[in-house]
Image 1: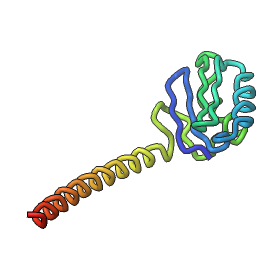
Image 2: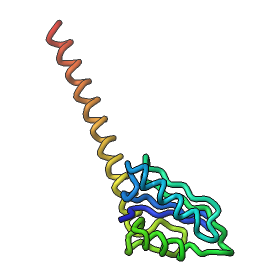
Image 3: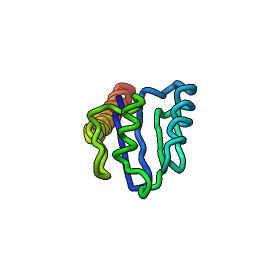
Length: 127
């Protein structure tokens, strides 16, 4: 369900379609996750589909939080629950963004060349 997870000790963020464009679901998630012992603050954005948890690592571990998120349907069962690197699928997202950016850059360069040649052709036809 989630496609992105980012963790640094004391802060965990996921992006999940379970709350995207669903303000009521985002508010329910925020209230539910705020009640967890060790969670300092919970934010849930229906606009971005993002849930951010600030927590006390001495009271609760990020693996436990990922388990709670899974249990409530906010995180997929295949996301990584360890380390600070993005979870499974996140590197694919970065690779996709790089490919998309490269494709856009090539398209812009080709369009500029097309406009440049068209301009030269129009000027040549007018003279």
